[in-house]
Length: 285
Image (cartoon, rainbow, N blue to C red; front, side, top):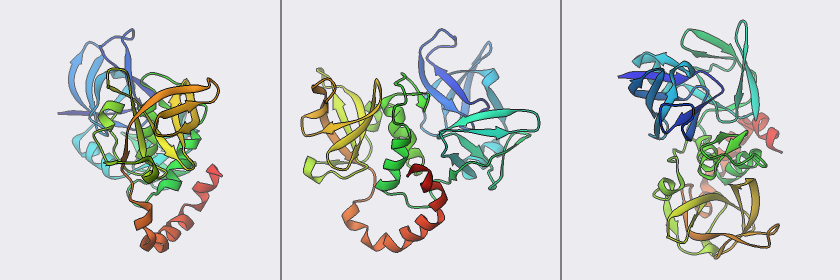
């Protein structure tokens, strides 16, 4: 098996091995893949985070040994800045919110034989318990990012890319597309039972899930439609005040976070976490 990591800021993941082919998703710096097939200068890969498949230009990948691939999965941090520079000896690489920093030690990360210095804020998923407040602050960082089919960065992101990247910072693995994400979590039967951080899914006239967003307090939702925006949400769906009409029909709400009413016993540990992350959270004030 061949392994690799994205060595550029953003690499398109395409449906076919051609620069003219549809971009179905993106790899961000440091994200790892398993290589299944090669064709000319292209690699057919399986993304380690979500199992998504597509073709990537081999020049945008850094080959990894099996040991490096395993180590990168176990020891990594995620960039929390909209854009931050990785500094090598003779060049910079701009990395976006959600990019992965392999083997990050608090000052440096390493990709293959290349070492980079990094001074921006990071989070290490899985080491802290992230609640709805954290998720909302991360989601709001993407506000006004333009909609881009297949996008996963603040420079262009689609609806399921937004939800996936926000949950990624909490170490929660969402699948790539809305019709895949709807299979995860547990259903919430009534809008009155929804809590911030729940995922709301929307269907088209054929009953197919085509859209997803993150529920906010006070019956609002953040989602990517034209741009990342906040709109009103009720049991009918999303109401766009600018257009003065419903734009998306609600199908189902799913929960992946813990019930907030049952987490009082975690307050003490969450307070400790908040102190540890205070410098990072200030960015989102």
